[in-house]
Each structure stands twice: as structure tokens, then as C-alpha cells.
Length: 191
Image (cartoon, rainbow, N blue to C red; front, top):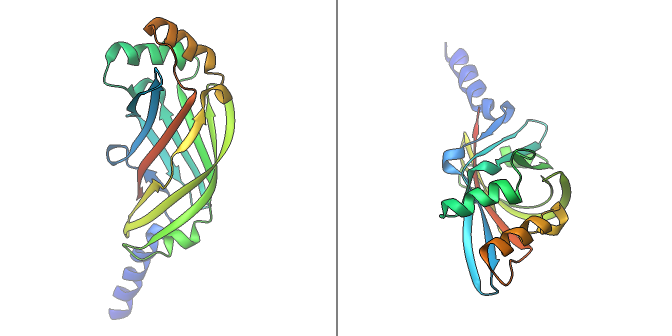
């Protein structure tokens, strides 16, 4: 009986190592900063996120562009329709490949810094970025991933410069920056 109990305990402890990891949307946040008229900077976010990390280390994060939230409903609607064109491009996707073994070997509370190439697909265009991430093993079934430095996306790399110009003209602004810093706090749970 003792051997059976030890075996079951070991099997349960090993489960998260061999499980897929799913993003906890409620506990996660993806934010971006917009700058207009040279000195006006605002923090915005997306509320709809889905993601996973598979056993082979493949990472996928889908961003539902219709869930953009700036705090101003008219601006949100303009971003959805005129910039992101959600009827054609409903989601952005961030993908990466990582060595998952060192992460699952972390003890609860332990952290690991990663420098990882990320591929961002947005508005029909792809661009690769070098990311600096901090991974924290919260407990046996949860990880937290935080950007140590924001990814600075250039709207022109994704064919969004024309849409930003249209928004600038509608709002009567002298300028809207093409540089958009993006940061994230993501929680993944073992499935």
C-alpha cells in the first residue's frame, strides 16, 4: 500500500511537467502605450487573450483585437474598424519556441530570466523581436511570465501607418507616434 501511495504521489507531481499550459485570461494583462501630440501618452490594453505553451515548448498567444480598451468608447471603435480592420484581421498572434525543461524544473517561487525571439503577426504582416522575460514558477500548476522590457513595435512594420494617419486626421492631432511599447503579465496554468 505504501509503494502504491508513493507511486500515485510521484505520478501526480509529474503531471504538470507533461501537461499543456493554458493562459489564464482573467489574471493576465497585455498593455500598450500610445503617444499623440508629442507629449500625451496613454496606457491601453487588450482584454481578450488566449494562449498556450505545449510540451515541446511551442508558445502561442492570440490577442482578440476587438477587445482593445482605451477608456474612450469612440476611440476603441475607431481602432477596431479603421486601424486594426477587425473584419479582416480579428486577431494578432505572438509565437515563440522555448526550452521548456528548465522552466518545469524551477521550484515554486524560483525565477528565470529569458531572452527569447518572438514572432508577432499583426494585420497580415510578421516581424520578429528579441524579448526579455522573467518567468516565475508560482506553484506546481502555475507560471507567471512578465516582460522585463517592453517590446517596441513600429506600426509601419505591420502596415498600420496609413490607419494611424487616418485616426490622426479624424482626431485633429498634429501627430500619433508609430512606436508602440507593449508589455505583458501572463499567467499560465497546467491543464
